[in-house]
Image (cartoon, rainbow, N blue to C red):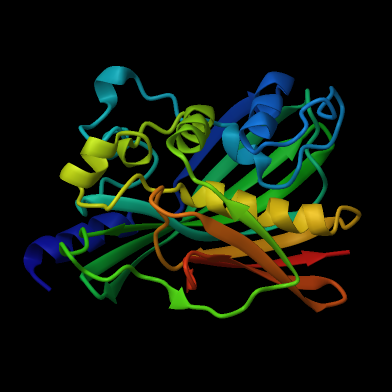
Length: 285
C-alpha cells in the first residue's frame, strides 16, 4: 500500500464516531407517492397509519445545493461521510431492527453515527467500506435502528462479467418486476437521489460503462420486502438484513422471490435470468 493510501486510511479513522442529527416528518403525500411508485393502493395511507417497513428511506433526503453536486449527480465528497477518492459509491447492504412502527404524520428525528471505516480487497482492486448507524425516533421513542454499509470502489473493467450468484430456486412466492426508466426515475425523485446512473442512460452507458440504467439498491430491497408483505400480510416484521451481490439494470426484468425458513423467518432474493443480485433475510412474528 502506497503512502497516499496510508494517509487516506489514517484520515478515515478520524471519521469514526462522527454524528449527524436530522429531523423530518412522515408526510402523507410522500408516503402515497411511494405507494403509487410501487404500484400499491395509496388510499390506506392516512394520517396516523403505520408506515410500511423500509419506507423511511424516502425521508431524511439529502439537501445539497445544486452548486455542490458533482458531475455524476451525487453531492461532492465530504460533509458527514468521509471524502473517499474511490470514484464509485454504492449501498452494499444493511441490517434493520424495527422496534415499533413509524406513523404517517409523525415528526421524526434521525441520529446517524459512523461506526467503522474498513479497507478490503475486491476483484477490481481496493474497496473501502463505511458502516453508518441510524437511530430513527418518533413521538413514542426509538422506532428503527439501522446499520448501513456503503462501499467505495473502482469501476469494473469494460466487458467484465456481471457480479452475482447463480440461482435455481423458484421460491414459495415470486413477483416479476419490470424496471423501466419511469420506475427508476420516480424512486430517485422520491429519495432526492441525483445519481445519473439511475435515470440518464447516455451517462450510465457512455461515461460509467454500464449496459443500461442501474436499479437502485434500496428500491430492490424494498421490492423484496413488499413481495414478502404481499405473501404474508398479517406478519409483523421485526428484522430485515440484505446484501447486494451484483447489479440490476433496466435491460431485463427480474423477479423478487421468497421462501420460509422457519416459523418466524424467510429468505428473500432477486432472480434475473437465474442470476441473484441481492439476498435478504426477514424475521417476523
